[in-house]
Image (cartoon, rainbow, N blue to C red):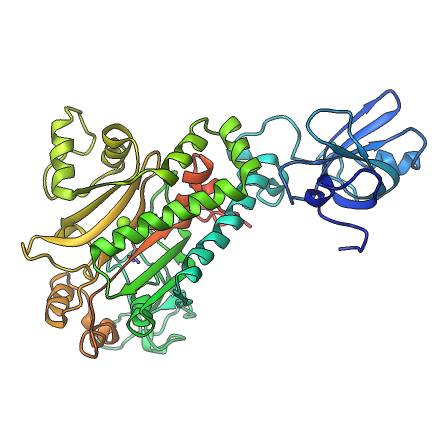
Length: 464
Ligand code: 4AD
Ligand code: MG
């Protein structure tokens, strides 16, 4: 940044009379009676800076290059703006086009583009109003996540992205290998691929969750959290699933499911309040242009208590609903999106925490209840989104954990260190995972998860 320059955000709050330099990209340009009006954005705020170029102030050929999408450096005086919408504008004294953008081919025009089209130009969509707002909110929320945990003494750990154990035991993992796909080494006797010859000396994958490593840290630092990318090789082509998404996973020793639930609620309230306090202009835009319920929803979440029911109670509510579900309901089935949305949107009208699910439909690491049928699981369901958080109290008893690993047909040798945590100083502990993009959908009202991450990865798609 130049000494005389500054973010558009700061210039907009500046005093008339100052000589300043603004740099950014042209959003729109309008010529009227010899005066050129340029809306300049540098991404620092939702509002653009209006540049006013009087006839003859700058070289005509230079000015002709200042079209939509071009990159400019403009110096001039901040003056009180007669127009509505801004208090100051920049009266141009000199203008330099740093990079032109041919108006005949520049894909990002003022006219409303579809989200699908904008996804195809993910290298340019950050310059649009919608995606400018999305990515500013995303950045602010990421900061709020760290702030929440750091203020509470949680230690941040980075979990490995390449692992040799399946944290969810669900088998939805991407392989990591440097073997020659056409001609892999094979075990003589069986003909199977010999992963002992592979880069890591055994089969490796991209992680589906940092939870198991977070448990290691919780049993040393008491409270910890991860915030990093996770990968799922599920062929889920829905508006709520990504193959690469970011997850926040706190893990707490000396904590049971009630404590876990309380933290999840406090955490969601905190980050929502942070967005309300720090992203007002962007949220107003979402409320006006994307979903007119966003602001009311967020204010409601920040101030009212979440509902809490058990899975068994949830099933009873759904059975009494008198709806013809696409996925029929009975005790033992997993809750589908339609059920989750009914509970949050129609029954309670606010986030709902469902706990104590049947052990058969939840992961091996969840603590078994005394009924021997349910586990100490919790899902936080949010209106519009469905499941936004999944968590549980963990099974801290060595014998019970071992029998669950075996019972689910998992390879216990891959979990040797996870089991040892239960042999050396085990403790009750609990944690959860918040899908960062699901949170983003909730806060912005954006309808498709592909539009709240800079560069989405989904089945058949990994451009950029
Ligand atoms: O419910 P999940 O699978 O739970 C875990 O991974 C646990 N290890 C978390 C823990 O207890 N530490 O995933 C947690 C959250 C979901 O609630 C959802 O918000 C998000 O991660 N999520 C996805 N987001 C986008 N695309 C996907 N394919 C997702 N799968 C899960
Ligand atoms: Mg889940």
